[in-house]
Structures are given as structure tokens and as C-alpha cells.
Image (cartoon, rainbow, N blue to C red; front, side, top):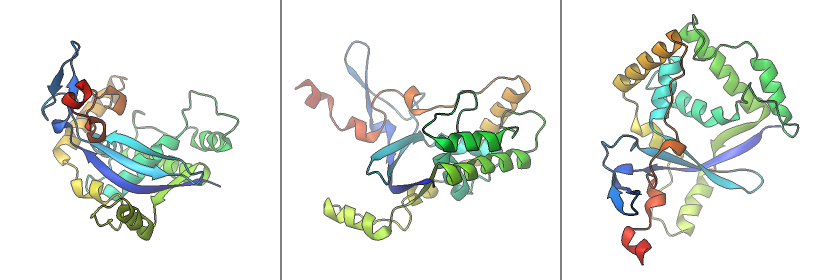
Length: 226
């Protein structure tokens, strides 16, 4: 049976307000125009075993998935579903772990399916293949779903927050929308990569400058110096 991962909140990190340490030990503000200073989402989740964590991702990941698989930029439901379940897709170049039998089942079922880098495949076939991978992750590894609204509202009240929990914790991401012009630019990059057999490097959390997520910039330079 797949695990159920419950989403409790989605927080946007405003990297323009963050600070980064210079090599000489000082600090510098990161402007929104700084390369790499892209807005970051933190999606807070729990699992049945009582563990909790945050999935951190750049807002641009939704643009990349829209460009790679021909997903409508306005279809945030599909884009969120794809992005949140992709972590469960096993790497076909690595052997499955004996502790996770779902990996082997997914690898077997996905054998031969095209990826976004497979040349000569239509957008419809590419999208169908990727949605099949997502379906297999839900069937054999985990399913991401909202935590119950009363529990999320109760948690906010418990910590003294005046916020009202949204009907769906992913609503802030859906409200941010996707720029179709940026999607078109990424689509051209991906098409170039297919034709030249070169993978495009997508931005990810480990490539970001330090302290570009709002929660990580809670300590000011003055406080840290003291």
C-alpha cells in the first residue's frame, strides 16, 4: 500500500529580501534580478510514521514541466500533481533497493516509456508517459494529499496565528500562476537539447545562493555577529 503524505502549508520564500555571505565573510543583499535569486516554494508535509519535512522548489519548476510535457500553463492542478509526485519516480540507472519493492514495480512498468528527452515523440505521448509514471508512484510508493482542513486550522490557532487555512494548502501556488512567455522560452531550450542530445540543467535548491529561502534568513547579520 502506498504511504499518504499530507500537505499542511505552502510558503513562498522572497529571495529579494534575503542576504548571502560573501567570500570575505561579509553580507550582501540579493536583488530579485540577481541570477539564481528565484522565488522558492516550501511545501510542508508529514507522513504516517510521524515524520515531517519541507519540499523546497523554485517556482520555475512549474514552467519547466509545462514546457517539457506540453501541459497547459493554466493547469496548475496537473502541474502541482506532477511536481509533488516526481520524487517517487525511481532512477532507471540505479538498482532498486530491497527495502522498497515499489521501486522495482515502477521500473518494470515504465520500461520503454518515452521521456521529455526522447526525440521524435509527440507532446501528447510524452505527457501520457509521464502521467503514467506519476500514476505508478501513487499506486506503489506514496500519494500526496491535503491534510484535513480542521486539523490545519487548528494548528494555526495553536501557534497563535490569525491566518485562515485555505481550502487546499496548495492554493497559494495555484494563485501565483505561470507566465506562458517564460514557458515558451524554456520549451525552445528543451527542443534545442533534444536536437543536440544535451540535457538542459534545471535550477534546483542545491544550486541556489545561501539564505535565499525566507525561513533561512531569519537571523540578521547583526544578530549573528553578536
